[in-house]
Length: 243
Ligand code: NDP
Image (cartoon, rainbow, N blue to C red; front, side, top):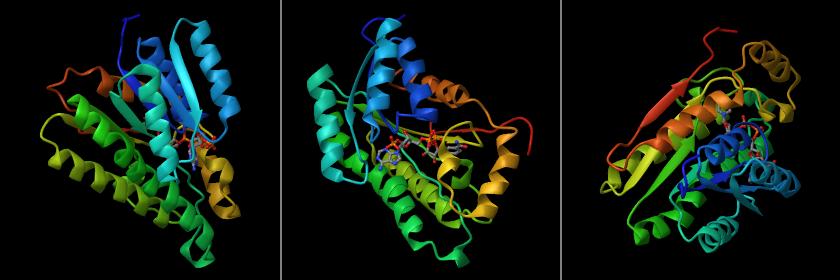
């Protein structure tokens, strides 16, 4: 294990890709700071990482609140003294056809998947600039590149964070690196919150070919491991088999 690794903040670390990323990066010797609303899960995960020799801390986080994300970044900075990497991973995907008019679910996707990422950038960018550099990793989706039925709003949020990440990278003077990691279907709890019966049924077909969350953690770990002069712009990871 590499000593004195980077300080990596991960949103949505209580399950799925975020939790797998926390485990993988801690095993690589990075110090992780974990956020999500289910903080009892974060506590358990930090305990597991610690018992395996890693360094992990957590704070309860709702990414829809800009103030909460500021407090999260401040707490990480107080704990470890730096903020090297922010993995903007928290996301929700309550799929449904537009005609179902599930407007509350549209709002929730926009609040978590888009505003959550912007809040992460707003909270961490000044800290990174002050310390002379940093790295944002946005977990987008194959839905950032193509639209499918029942996924219009979800894909819109992922197109949006792809655009935001690209803009942030273009505006950076090189000190701030920005990577977009876009998974195809991956084992996690993401589909558990789908309320539309047809969309829920369709997901069972996809789940048959789902990647383990560790496959996405591996891609994130690759981006984190690069030297300062290398910025991995985009990685798309799909299951080899189609559904
Ligand atoms: P999970 O549902 O397992 O994880 C989602 C995470 O987001 C949870 O830790 C959840 O924690 C957190 N979260 C949700 N709402 C909030 C909030 N308001 N504030 C803070 N955290 C929140 O799904 P995945 O691991 O699959 O999702 C991770 C990312 O991967 C998402 O951005 C998703 O869109 C993306 N993705 C996933 C794919 C897949 O097939 N699994 C494919 C493409 C992209 P809590 O509820 O405790 O707050």
